[in-house]
Image (cartoon, rainbow, N blue to C red; front, side):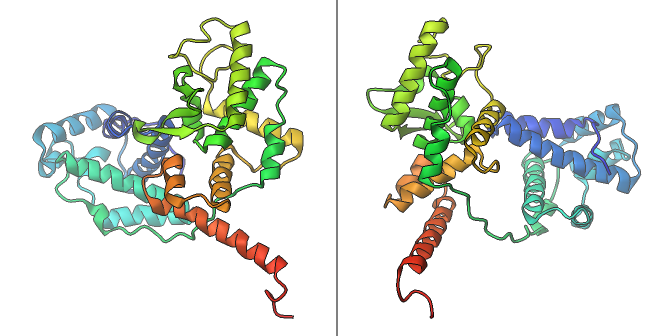
Length: 338
């Protein structure tokens, strides 16, 4: 079954809520939208209902005006919207069984369940469903995957790849240095404005998930790379010192995209012969791992990464413990049985 492009007002309103009130990134909201379109496609096939945009809008409007799901079915009985508002746990389990036939990974299944859980919680908060069927659905257990990290030597090879004699090369070097120096996400990197850089204080203001701001230190190598890039930028572009302007821009002079950053990283990985599976996020993992390897406090790393929960950061301690064990096994004369 392919995902359709049918537009349901109930879905678009939910996605708008994620963007406007929950401050989700556009990418995350799109992922939720894909999951919910898959859900509505299943219901269309399962219930034999033809898509009628006007009927769907009327049904959703009635549900919001009455705030009573029990009478929606009498207004528009043959709509996907009314089916969602009256759905029971058996039909949701049918949808999940349908997904399992596609051999999705446990992580993907967990994400799709999380989407449905958020969606039905939103419906419940608006009073458009009388009970939430998702409270009876469990998320499948996932094997805990350790984040990938690369060695300091490989980081150095990657960071030294851009040609800093050119404007774009100096920009790329500054971006890579910033990613590794701070451990910020790519979405946070592209959101940096010139005014967010505090060269004197060697710090950077970062706007993270949910638009929460945090201040992270900038290493001397990153500051040098940023200063070099800004000097070259001032020579070639106007308004290069306006604090409200984007720090990292593309050839057209507009804010660089996350996709462009990923493409640049791939280009330099190929250039220096590193694993093409390495991503900008790998630099974030490497940042955390290298800090912990060298004795950094776990809570300090949590704050630097912008993690809400310490348990999210603790996954890196498993990685450093694993590396310690490997070093022990290789170096201690009585580590392994002879």
